[in-house]
Image 1 (cartoon, helix red, strand yellow):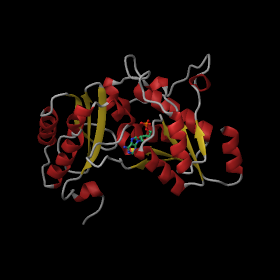
Image 2 (cartoon, helix red, strand yellow):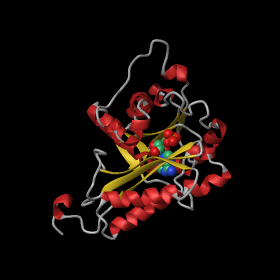
Image 3 (tube, rainbow, N blue to C red):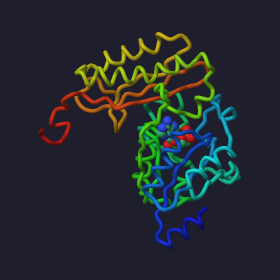
Image 4 (spheres, rainbow, N blue to C red):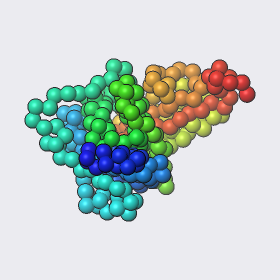
Length: 284
Ligand code: AMP
C-alpha cells in the first residue's frame, strides 16, 4: 500500500482514504463517492480494529462480509480495497498508542474508555500507510470525526479531514453496520433516536433555548418505547463537546441508546432561529 501510494504521489495524484470496519452500507458508499469527487485515487480500508473495542464489547460479533464489500466497492470504482490483518497492523512487540486529553472524556468516551485512543491510533497508522491528501469520515460518528481532526492537527499530519453528512434509511434510522443486530420488533425503539433529534431540531428552530427542556423531551420520546435504555442524551458545544445549557448558537445534540443488545448512536446540529451576531462573528 505504501509503495502504491508513493507511486501515485510521484505521478502527482491526489489520494483519498476512506477508513471503515466493513459490512458496507449506503452511508459508507456516500463517503466513497465524496472521496471520488475530491481525489484521483480512492483507497477504502476495511479493518475491524481490536484496539478500539473494550472488554465485553462486540469485537467477535461485529458483522463481516468482505466478498460483498469487495463487490460494492468495485461498483463504486474505488481504486484500492486495503484489508490488513490484525497481525500486520499490530505485530509482535507493538506498543504505541495515540491518546487525546479532553475530547474522549465526553459522550461515548465515558462508557467506552479505550475506544477513542484505539480510533486515533489506527487512523494515524492508516494515514501513514495510505499517504492520502484527504481522509473522509461520517458525521454519524461525530465525536470520532472531532477526535480524528484534532489528532491530525496535533500530530501535524499533512492531511485534510473531511466530514460527510449522515445517510439515513427512509424511516429516519441512521445507517449503521450494527443495525444488523436489530430484531424485527425493535425497529420502533431504534427509530426513537432520529425522532427525538428531529423533534429537538424543530423545538430549537422555533425558539426553545433551554437545553434541559429539549433533553427532557428527547428522553421522554425515547423512554416511551420499551426496549430502550439510554446511555446519554446531551446537547454540547460542536467543537469541544462540553455541555451547553443555553442554546444561543449552533450546538450539537448527541445520543446513545441501547436497543436490545445493539448500542445505537445518532446526532444532529441544533440551530437557534437568530443566533446573536457575536456568535456568528458578523452582523446581519
Ligand atoms: P464504520 O465502518 O462504522 O467504522 O464507519 C466507517 C465510516 O463510515 C466512518 O467515518 C463513519 O462515520 C461512516 N459512516 C457510518 N455510518 C454512516 C452513515 N449512516 N452515514 C454517513 N457516514 C457513515
